[in-house]
Length: 335
Image 1 (cartoon, helix red, strand yellow):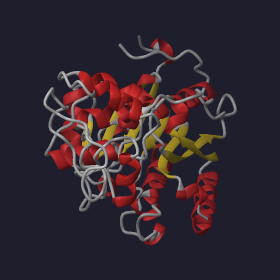
Image 2: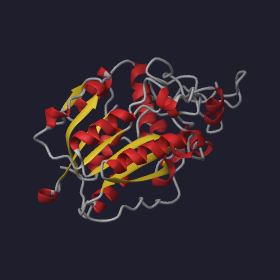
Image 3: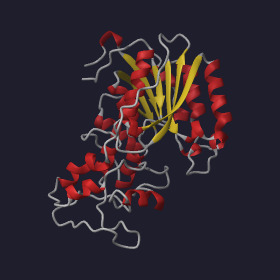
């Protein structure tokens, strides 16, 4: 059910596979447009939500005039995290992939009631990015916004994954209510609890034993950059963390284990070859996507879309708090 006369609108930038957009939709917002330059991700958006208006183009070239007739309550997006990731060169604002200035350009042009930007936790926590944070807050203040920055972890919102992300929430000075961060939901499920039924779905007799071995939340799923990564569960240290959950992180499997698969412990040089690999559908579940969400492109392209997504449940929790600050307190899933 929608929000009726209280419906809120959103423009999504750097939309990717739609994790944040889906969570914002679940919080009751109607998207007036989604901007994404990756063709596979755009096809993912279109096939899952044919009603969404997807602009397949570089954000730097996006003209907000195409939605000039639309009132935008929320400008949201997950700008590329590579410039601020501790795994990268940490070039920050000097990185050519930094799109925070483009987000500010659109805020100035559209003047939404609220802004929601997701990025890696380092942007909020790393002292070397202090000048960038200060500049961002200052620029938003000049545009008439009060900014909140906080780090949220997906495992605190019902996901079986440690995934810390920085959230930048800015509210226009005429906002109805003060913003409050969402409350944590409590103890997260384990990987075994979330994926156990899937592992058993093809008749694998070892699924129950595996579920007991996978008795903790997962490390952060990774997708890699536009040109690098994808196709596996990350570098060696990440694979070792997955191995402690009885998961072989060398690659993604095409299918779940069947009745012929034998669970072996500590096989091979790295100690994880005897464990089952995850499928992309299982990785999607760990990210909080609904089971019927479909991803387009090659296997590597799909793994990047999934690994780089912002979990919908976390996006929904933040968007619901934004909706409350904007004066809409009863939000519902869209029809």
